[in-house]
Length: 273
Image (cartoon, rainbow, N blue to C red; front, side, top):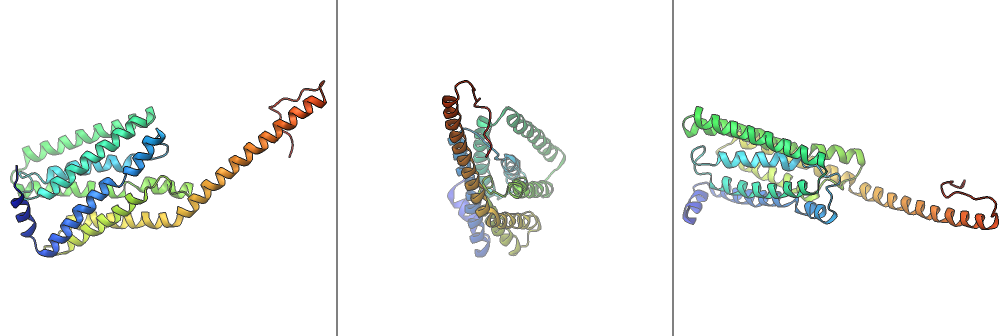
């Protein structure tokens, strides 16, 4: 077990600015992993995934798995915080996907399981190649770091499928606000960390893309949040009016059947407006 003194030593060997941003980044990362919780509470409550997409959570599983591997002492030493926060994230994502699998349709379950199997195979292949073909932490850090960067970008841009749905439906119902906000803050925080000496290109690339992606989601949310509510209200009013008209028609049909007993009017016949 690693002592607390080691953790503090690891933090304070960095300069004070990096230490502050690193701590803030880990807090925001935790918030990022926790942010979908309200969405999955809704899924459990309704016992249906409705139109929610599992793409961000599938992408985050692989992203967290690679960062945990990257933080191992035999790949990139002294990366305890990277391992801890991404291990926590991995647990969160598996819980979310378990809930999704519980309430998804058969087609949805097959899709998620297929992607997870592909991810496991790919992850195992990268681990084997890294451990058997690459020797020394410098080379391993470089290769695994690039892979982590790629999947970090994938995690950040995975909500694009949800953004497309928002534009199509003009409703933000299926784009969780807190996930978008924490995506933006997380990307912004780690981008700031990368820009402070020593400059870290790999952290900068993926997280700057994440910040832009999160900002785009927030802008989209602002544009469509009121429209979405309006659309929902209009749909409710429309359904209410249809039910009211149907009730009036049925009463009219019953009355006509009473006054004209020799002519039966079917309920399936809609009266002209």
